[in-house]
Length: 411
Figure 1 (cartoon, helix red, strand yellow):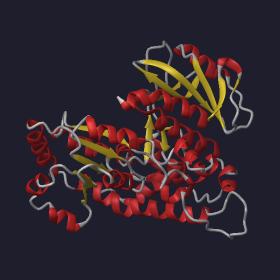
Figure 2: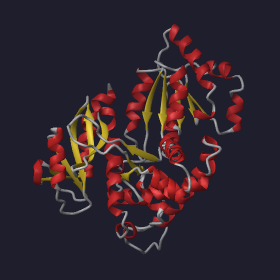
Figure 3: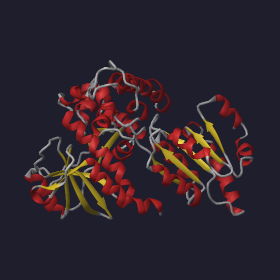
């Protein structure tokens, strides 16, 4: 098991902040493993319930009585979005326990449909619940576990894919060992989502069309969203494309990165950029098995940009809000981190051992008054480059941002 950075924040919130915590993340990302680890040493014991298991659902036929009988224990409920009726029961139990002074550490709720679950829970558990996101393994977690950045990029951060056993000849000493086993897992993951989750969350949505869209988004990784072009390719309407992407965003498989829209007196691009969030899934959708396959494909640059973007956003936590910036005149910032309405950090991504910055990046930073300027590249050294920026590795920048975030998370 790879230790997850979010574990400390999760324990703090359960122990001293709110009665219930909702842990959100896509399937197979490690929610259950982390929850079981916390439950194993929870003071007073814990109960684990999986709403996909008929036996566990039967235990909740009289949910109010069963859950009240678990007082003093941590109750973990997995795939909670399958049992939306539980939220009203939980509200009553939490309020009754609060009335007698029991305020924290009652329920840990796990879910894989972010928007739907937050809507369900916020209506009934307002003021009683905190939300935490868990994504695939990031660069800090992988490095701490002795996993190289290129392996993380090629395989992605889903633990089963990242830790897959060697799948090639055991005498092969190349970096591509084990890629076939990892790729097989990711192909099965994609198929499972299309055959299982799509019918559950969107019964009328054709899984074949969604699968084609997923692959198209991988080919167009990091480009501006063009609903009309995607709709024309799939033979559907633009509103239908929006519904498809809404579902994939809800399942945390796709990210819509919003453009910065502050008043800077410039004509700004208004369409979001779209990324398939996990780089390993990008490569599986495009049948790219090894590092050489990825590096030699036209998607290599956009894939690396998406990989860096996701890792930076995850390691930065909630301290900053992520955007990109682009004007119609060509000024552009790949990733812009904003806090309190003020852009603070500008990041350009270059998959080059000797990165250089375009004038458009400097113009964009000057437009916004951004002083902290970085170009993330695959090397290990940190050094100054043009336009007041620093070349820096993903690991080094992620470490800086994570350290700045830690006091906020602990509070």
